[in-house]
Length: 227
Image (cartoon, rainbow, N blue to C red; front, side):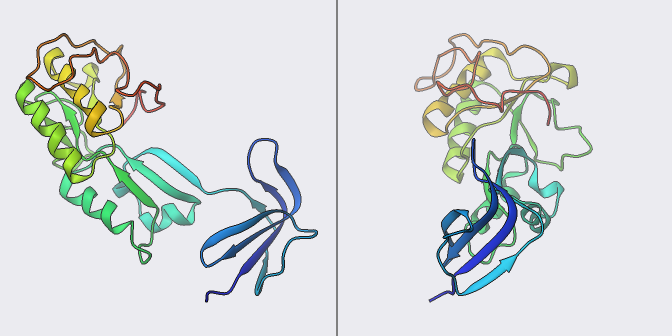
């Protein structure tokens, strides 16, 4: 059985309204079993005292994790990430590897490539290797692409609406990304201009709901400008 570990610090933040002085965190078998005031905390097999500040690990919901060393990302306190555009073969393999205990990096959930228009963002960007942007070719291709990405493990579908950087998907193609409502959780967008609404006009089985917001009923902070 793995030994338990107590980490003590002069100050810790454990959530809204939970700023704790002289704090302790105890882990047993890789699971946190206690977080609170050090006084009266349970005993542990090993103890580590740090002269610093303790807080929960961060989940970053908008990254391109291959632009950094995953090990360095984890060391920086980021325990989980959502990758929102990278070549499919590379990022889905990395996401699968992140599930293993031996992986040196954060847990990864990935969108795969960003759906875009022909020659659209990010296909010509210096930061994006070939395959980071997937150029759509009509409603049927869009519906098929979303399905394939979902089967490969995409938790979200990323759509480029950055018209200032190049062509964007057509309204009919955008309407078909609504299929992400069933096959993935929502469809974030990369945009520096207002999102357009897609009309009805996609193949049978595709959502005809306007894509003026994320495909979830909840708003998402991922509907924002940037990479």
